[in-house]
Amino acid sequence: MTNTAPVVAPHTAERVHSACAHAESAMLAVPGLDPVPTSVHLLRQCGDIVIAVPSNSVAAVLVMTCGNTGSPAVLELTDHAPLPLREPVRALVWLRGWVHAVPGNTQRALAAAVAEDHPHPALLDIGHTATLLRLVVDSAVVADTSGADSVTREQLRQAHPDPFCAMEGAWLQHLHADHADVIDRLARHLPPALRRGALVHPLAIDRYGVTLRVEAVEADHDIRIPFPTPAHDVESLSRAVQALAANPFEHGLHRI
Image (tube, rainbow, N blue to C red; front, side, top):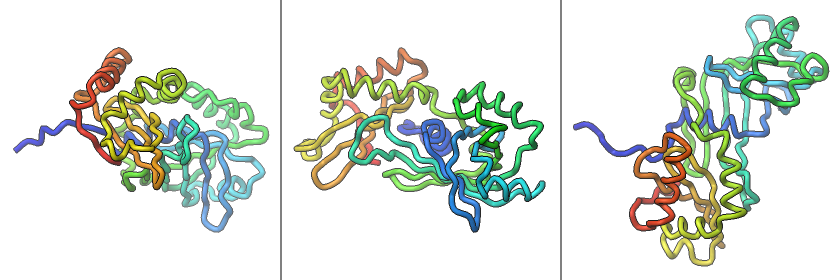
């Protein structure tokens, strides 16, 4: 029998892409060395992630001496909620693979290509105090309050971030600052016992639904409220949120 159950959350590879796009901080770990912070990271569709590290870091020097073989490495990225929550971390991502040097004569060209998708001011440091490296990803793991899931390089190559990923932070901040009434109505989807004495915040929004963070006395709980059908543009996303806020008894809950 064909499984016709509706999709209520992004699949794992999409979550990895979205978390990488949201993450403001990342650490590169090379065996035998202390982790080094990256100032830039961009996960590309080709299956690698371009990162910028300090030119004088031991990791950068080591990778430069590894030749074509590169070095095994893990990049850890942290996705923080754009709101002042008790526990701000939404997800952690670990990208495992081989890190390679980018030839000096192509550093600026690659920085310009990265800037087209990710115009980060730290790219201006490339060739001066920072250098670009490429981590060719073999596998990825994403972990949040629902647990940990892994994906392969090929699954990452076939995935994209959530289509509303770039706008999500501003929307959540707008909800938090100006629409307490909408948050209250969304919270009516929660069991009364879970709401009692708790603070409820909008934690995430994507094409499949809204996730609420419930800060209860004893613990935090993340509860996902799915849309009846995925949103495909800004208008349908707005209608989906309004429908959830208008009718707290129509849709199921998914604890994550």
